[in-house]
Length: 296
Image (tube, rainbow, N blue to C red; front, side, top):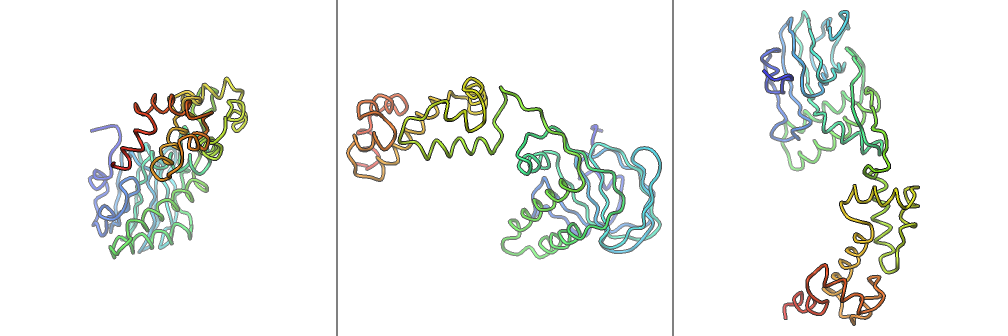
């Protein structure tokens, strides 16, 4: 057996009647399953995914031990239990219950947290909470179950939106998030990368300096050049030139402008400059590219 068990292996340790499965509708990195359970005493090995349990029907005293002493809570419809990944757990309950399971992959949680905080995330761990009353998660659970059961048009889009909403809510309220330390030679934060690319596009018709781009990220020009190469795999000057060539291509395909006008609109000094750089990236002249694009 592997170190962590997958979703498909869980019924071996927690046998129950499967009532609903999101596999046909929902995303695989945020999977929902609904189970009906009889009274049980089970031990579950560490799981590879985070586990959220939302109680749908029945009421019982739920006993659980993850690390340390046993915990007990009275659970019923609308109550939620959280279990972080990679931890074994022992569960006991005395009455019939129906529950929804959310299995959330660490990759999906890391991606969501990175986008939510606009920082590189190193690790996420859920708080050990056995019984919480959370109307948001209860409502999302009902909406997801409806989408999975109904299978109507747009179900996948709706399910994905609910998955994102649930993940952000969980990260904000019930998770410990550790961020990676920034590095002068590391990648840009997503927001900085968007600002850089937008700035280049908005100023493509003129000469863009390294100092200007570095100021966007509050870096020195040397730091910026290192981070830019690490992020994009290309030097800033070459990246800008490539964007200028792409801008020229767009004009050549759709506009009947003179080449010298296209050169100026695309940020080149003159037509001769456009010809030299264009041939380097496209292996043809602008005139030849225009002829090929027009099909004549």
